[in-house]
Image 1 (cartoon, helix red, strand yellow):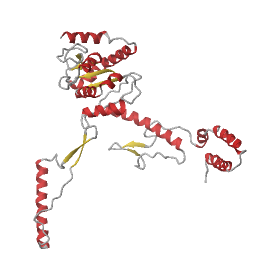
Image 2 (tube, helix red, strand yellow; image 1 turned 90 degrees about the vertical axis):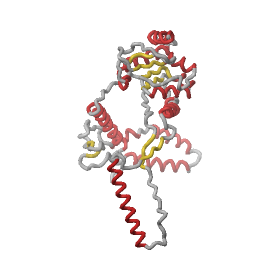
Image 3 (cartoon, helix red, strand yellow; image 1 turned 135 degrees about the vertical axis):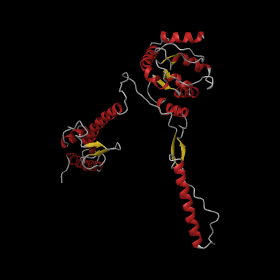
Image 4 (cartoon, one colour; image 1 turned 180 degrees about the horizontal axis):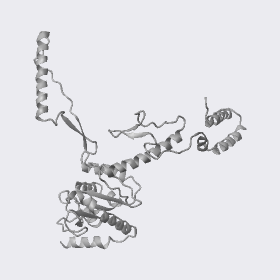
Length: 352
């Protein structure tokens, strides 16, 4: 049986410590000396001496793994899922192997997104951390539990033969009814019910929840929002509920074809004033990108997203949005007013 070097070292140390604890006053010096010895032992270096080289394949095939038709990672030969403890008692080596395989899988997922989903990978500017909210997922659907109602005609006084005959007729009737229902509405084979997610039962609740539990607690000093369509309404609701916090942490907000309405949402004067200074709404329009668009609402400037298709407004306006964020960040750092472009939009709006 092989014994690792770390076991040979740690066991005598444990015994020595036990003897020291039972020793007299002069043993204090020995304790200090032993602590000094322990501080000089590099356990990582000792472990490296027993482990194989950290030389791993650079392809899935090299690791003998592949994704099956269900998208599950499986071993090519055994069909088993990924095993972390590939080599016993070599945790560091197993961790490095896991990380190497993880890098390959990350690249593989990016390739799928680009090839199968026709997405394009674009790196955002250095220094940005990203949180992607999911305000549309507010509930899950589960099958509605079936309630079995006992027939009032059932009676223990009835003969067993008669009860069996009635049960058989009832089952046949239900079978025919279920078959007819499936034929009439094949998409509804099961009756479903909605279970709302706690504290996230609406897009507005979701925005407030993510703010409270993640954004507000982050160390970020400059927070930027990109809110598309109903997301703009959710952001305004966030401001109404967390006005002081949002103003202290958010540097700029880019709305894309937002459906918010400061009147219907009853946003106060201070919120409307803040939005005029720190928000811009890129709306669907056939005009060139960043062309000023008139608005009847006293909230934030509106400019063209360079497309009249609602679903493309975010993608088309991204170059202008990041420029808007950069200028807002620089203005905040230098304690200057917003840029000329943003002021010009505001002046035109106020003149209306």
